[in-house]
Image (cartoon, rainbow, N blue to C red; front, side, top):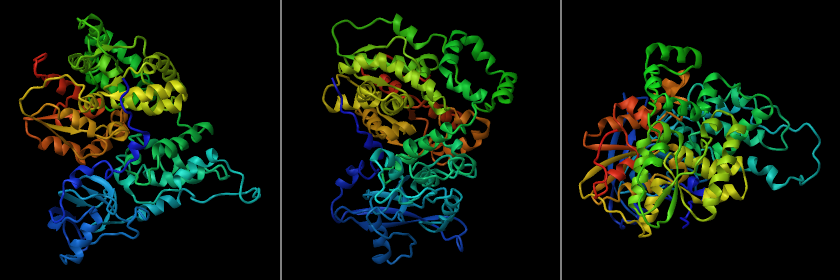
Length: 578
């Protein structure tokens, strides 16, 4: 059985392309409820909102709404546009919490339109871009040629120019900077790095500029959250080509940041977690002692204010081996049991297993699988990540060849299997595994849509507030999770309009990033969780997201596997808090 894999370009599709539903339900003449955040710093003490009613016209875009407010309603409103065809980058705005271009974004029945964050506001929806242009000038954005031209046209092959050519599509819309959770005094943000990569990655360039990625742009503060790629209207793979390309050049030129003790600890979290689980009572007690946290902070730079995850005494793979298995012939699925499922939150693996078995599948684990490699990859241990990728591909490829789905619960692991393995260990095996790797929510939603999901859910109502992990939103969007969580007939799943939760894996544990990680969460995530009533369940697929919600808002967020397993009508497991 082969499920349709969302193509790689799915992560680069604009939000408008994936949200035709609300627009398609509108009829010409229907009144849209539009709220705009207005602010004139020269006279207003604080931003305020004003609401309008705008009649819908066929295939209406947000920019047309703004035009109507000014031209037909006669209100004063500052906004920008020039081309109207997604080329000039002038009309970037926030619509219902999403960065987008006003000229390309379909309208919705209700809209909150705001200026892009991370920039000073000149007036209303117009932002001040001066900092971007000043930062870009520091990166020497010119082509340096010292040797004579070999002739015209130059004999450049497509592959040599591919990376630089990708950067040339940038329209300087500022969406990536506004979506970046790390942008600030220490990090210029993605757009200046795109301009740097346009020249640094160009095979014709002879300038010595790569060091500026660290010295001036602060590339080490990028948390690889994929938000820049996700929001880019020009479909530029900013993280994958620009930022990764610059990091590769730094490493190849011997300018890579030296690995610290903390980097090595986080890169080898799988080994540490295995031992932590074996010594769980002792390890959990010691790591919560103030003295131990002080030592970790002093020696490794792990902030003592950030709670550490607990280790499970009984790891998931041991529970899986000892459980009673359903009888009979069933279609097979592989459950990729990640490090955190195995050693920190085995209840997620239990729930996923019970859910898939209730749906009629035979769930199998792959023995001797290694960590997906994400912790190593994110800390710069590329060779070690490649070794893990090659090992896991040898184990998973035979199943993928037979069309056996590989179901993954942790979004960062899915990102490795579906995207990063293709670069770390390119070849037929990586392609086959990528085509058969799915998040649990994707798998369940796709089977339900195909009419192949034999599950009966409770008829009890439940309100769900869902936060999307960065890799989850970049790979396939949050829509599959919302569809899966909406399968119980009286469950209503609503997305929190957020960017990164701020944790970015281990980033939120690091002393120099702790405060910034909480600031990123306070933009939208934590306020939304705090405002949710006690009857509302908070849902998040990523372990780091759940950790941030627990630490910053005092609420326990649950994995979709737990929510769906507990919603089964046959009462396999009562609803509980872990």
